[in-house]
Image (cartoon, rainbow, N blue to C red; front, side, top):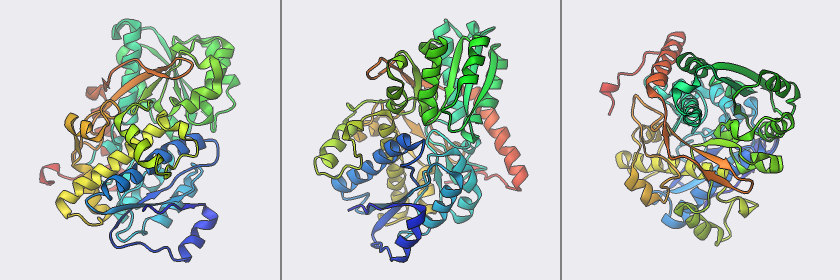
Length: 439
């Protein structure tokens, strides 16, 4: 049975000194979560879905290869210093130490990159984090799985191009990039600038100081500049505030395209009726009808072991993202067991599994996740593995899928990734791996 401990920074030391015991046959997955503060809606949803999936695997399969999955939470409040402290507190726990870390924070991910490599613990940054970490030659310990931010950015511009009647129609258009004032918010500026040059549109970058509930001056600027589209790179309270502000200045919500972290029920419901028509990207769409979500309801919630206080959120976008986190973490362990045996694995062994993931249509069907996750395959060279995005639109009551998976512009993104990774390697004195020698 999974141990369920929610640890604040104040109580974390006390809990550890009390002597948490770990069975020799368990696989430990740390949970540096955030359930309080301005980003709590996202944190509770994603980590709730993640934990539910671990419970589901334990209850349905008895763990992975007979190895029970355990976890321990540590509250970060989405703050970098607290995230680093949680990393230090959790990295050595469990019989073999931390399997991998999922911070759900670009800032924390940046902050622990070097120490995680030194500690030989992989960082899984699904849909967030440092984009050039997609180059596994330079970043062997970081996995921005499914779709990195630059890939997602190119799919948003592709989507806007489709709505305008073709990519050539983007020439002369104005696109405002309203972004969260953080490392996360600034991550896509380089690729948007490259796309603006490629397609001939005018890019207007507008920063919103974190947490983002004050945006009056930014939307007055948007009203004056009259962009054709607004890309909303929000998170937490910023997203609903932006939708409300757009309505106040008369900007059409169906001309707003949000990042997936601004595309959950938690972003649109607080905005009320004015959110109708708003569009957002998705690496894991909303919806409770996916077989894996239905099975979690049956196996976990009917047994009274669900993590979500509000079970009505099961199947919402943030929850489904958590389920996807669970799927990819568990599948990495499963793959790693094929090489190292059905036993608790070290972070270094799990890293091998992350680098050899292959989830095809057949496996997605077995997992009950067709349409929830795109097919993906990772390698030494490619730690992203997919690079595809779907888009959904809020109809006032629920999210409606409006596209199938859209492939990223790899011809644009991959050279930028390699150039950025090479610059990082030079700065840090890193000799990139020779992937021809990896197996």
